[in-house]
Structures are given as C-alpha cells and as structure tokens.
Image (cartoon, rainbow, N blue to C red; front, top):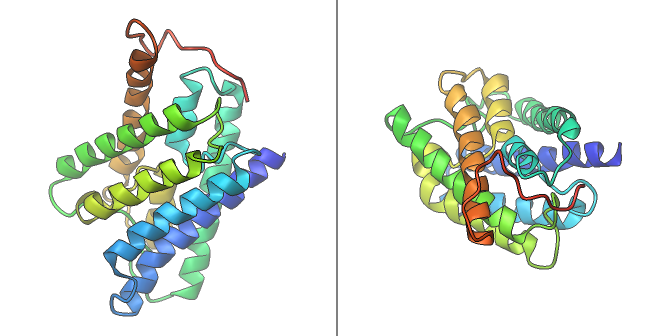
Length: 227
C-alpha cells in the first residue's frame, strides 16, 4: 500500500501548493505573481519526485500513469488504483483550500482564456512535451534520479510560465478535476481531462521513435523495467 499512499500525498501536495499559490495570489492582490505561481508548480513537482520517486514513481498525474502503462513500464492492473489515489489526493487538497478560503470563487481551477479549442491544443502539446521529457529521464515507471526531478520540475515551471495565461497549463487531469468539482466550475472540465491524456499518449510513439531504428506504434511497446 505504500506506493498508493505516496501517490495520495504527492498529488495532495501538488494541488495544495500549486492551486494554493493561485488562491493566495488572488486574495492578497497579486503578491505571488504569475511567475511565482509557475515556479511553485515546478518546485512542488520537483520536491515530490525526490521525496516519493523511489516509492511510487511520483506520477502524481493520471495522464502520466496512463502513458506509462502504454509503454509496458507499468503494470496495468495498478493503473486504476493509481488514478483513484491521485484523484483522492487532489480532492483532499481542494477541499482543504475551500475550508481555508470560503469566499474564493474557483480555487485555482483551470479555465480557458479564449476559445476552447485553443486551450485544448495547448494542453495536448504541453502534456506531450512534459511526457516526452518524463519518458526520457525516468527509470522504468519511476520518476527518480539526480536530474529527473530538476528536469521534470523545470518543464512544468516553464510551461506554466508561458502557457498559464492561455489554458491554465494543467497537464494533469487530477489537478484540474479537484478544484473544478469543489468550486463548481465544470463547464470546460472535459477538455482538461481529455487533452492531457491525449498529449501524454502521443508522447509514447514519439519516445519510441527516437529510441529505436524504426517508429513503433503504441500497440508495439518497448518493454522496460516493470515497477
């Protein structure tokens, strides 16, 4: 059970710190700043990778877990328990933020700044880049190692910094689901559930192409260490 508990704690920390930075920025008149929010997301991801990477792999993201399963790095019977734990951790974080900031409207929910398809495409591409980096720096299905945390956390911060004002730079269905459900902002939730998973899955054949002498399909996975 230790890996499942680690995913609950890791996702809780991600959502509490990341969306918490958004909420605090709103209620204090912008003291955190957009750059500070982006850095917060990157730092908490990096910290969780170093903290629980050896235990659960520090997926803390349903899109990452699903993509790992399609590379055969991750045992598929563990996918549903991981998704449940990630969702539980995210919901706990948003519920706590709701208790702390009763008057806040959206609790850091991801909302498109313009037309929905613009943000949808952004989320697909952002998650593609993130997952491509994860696949290249991780060990098996585990995000761990001296540089893995720094590399993955940097990508999260970078993408949040330039894409946050457009799509919210979610890249994570659990991160978007929890504040949307708790705050009641469900209108655009579907695309923040679909787009990150699609982007992460597209990264799988891209990763396979650069690591083999021919481009493999998702149905022809590279078998690596099971975790």
